Length: 200
Image (cartoon, rainbow, N blue to C red; front, side):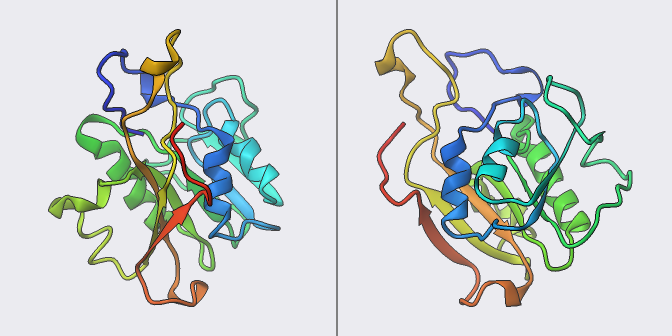
């Protein structure tokens, strides 16, 4: 995830744990109940636990390094390595952003390449990530791009002793890719969640 707040040092490997409400917001529009899910940037496991709470039957956890949460495998998602998972499965994660968003772009490319037939790819990214013309191949020109779920709350990534200075400045969204028959609406569409809004 890209962090635009310059008052804080960048976290190593962009390890920013995702609050559970962000996954609950995704679940308002993407059915996770009974689904197997691959979380390829598991980190400390907050998203994996939120996916289970949202009804996922199985969450397969991998990451490039260990952060203390049990992993099914150490695995570099953007590498050419292969990982055989029982299909179908959804791939859902908050990817590392990297300089100029290049790591996030690599996650999209890898996610589309590794996508399970019948599964959904959902990545948490800055809300304006699809506006760059150099990324049109992932969005406007990609037949699998299904939806953008704009978060109506801002995610608090950094704790601060002064709550007024903790208020986040970045808008985020879930970007969703799937086969055309998985969403019974014209694609791509813009949706909003959580159903209540408000910052923080």
